[in-house]
Figure (spheres, rainbow, N blue to C red):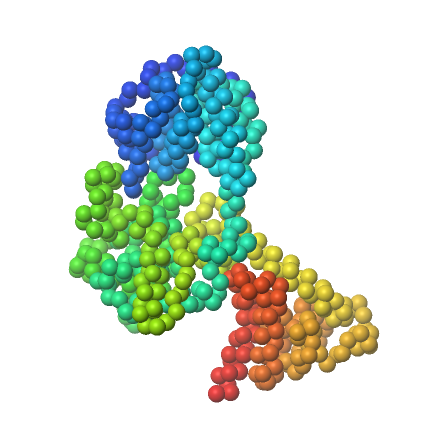
Length: 528
């Protein structure tokens, strides 16, 4: 729900109850289509099967079940099927927790007591999203004028504070198998995926999953976004002069509230190799369809397609054009299946297995972390990650802030005298008395290093050498590669000392380390 809608759910509002007959509608209108409600099971899905089986609420009184149906009817007009299913799941749990209903007190009072008992017995110090769903269902039901929901209960529920899911915890604190991939792990993964592509043809069963995995790595998308992709979302532009191709993919949004699937898109540029793989995937799936001029009009064709006999028709998928989709599990399991395929081949060749735990969510966090550390503006990253606001992406920038604060502490400890000189607070004579002026300005691991170069700046430096030197255009580096290699190693060791061997990705690619590393590479080429 939007903030404006939430603001209207005032617990102190006095809503007169509306007498309604027992729910007996044969159908209701969802946000995209008409839903059959005459049977015990409601099929509410839009792009994948999502069902509500009302037999799971058999312990509830008939009147309560009727009013729950009225509430979910309202939800289905505005929310996604998965969100409505989350409300239904917490009601199923509430139903199982109730032993029996009594004749006295009233049904409304008993419901309030059962709701509070359920909340008390299911408090969780980490995540109470399900309890918040229960509260929202109760508040909304009261505001719809349903007779079994009390104003006093709404007032109490509104004062309870539930703990949400701590998003970003696996970014801020390293968690094995969950946190973003480290730089070395990401390099190894990319190399292995390239090698896998060289070994399999577009007709191999693993090929579609390899394409999906590359899309997770390169674009940081969600599985649902890949499920919604159509062939018309993929475009190829050919330069008439050079014949070079560029590839674009219009990625559908799945996080914009109150919007139907495939109503908003974000154009993303694809690397040439990935564009060629998608081109081959379409060609293999649809024969010559991709090479024809009719491609632009075939938006009903799925980009990823499952087997013909996948059982979805028997489960009554709602949108016919998504019946052939391989389903959410195909995309969710693609990275782990590809890694298992790669590991099997590596072991057969006597090589060590990668042993990486990959999920679309982990690859998405890796994409976001690297993008933030590379300086991507927060607004741009918000759009790339398909978020509605900046709230959920700031964790990736906090990672960089924490690193900066820790490095700043190192500067203050080791560089205080030198910075005081550069800022004009002490004279050069005073500095010489305190330190050996022939050393590099840095922590203990760098003080023994000399001869990294000269500074062409004629005035006191306000930066933080030696880290700032390698990225400064006033710095004239020496051609002694061994000195710079030692500095680079010392910088990397500083990261290990401060953050441990499992430092989050990007700590070894901060600007000063990148600049020093680039200088070493250039000198290696010059010395060949």
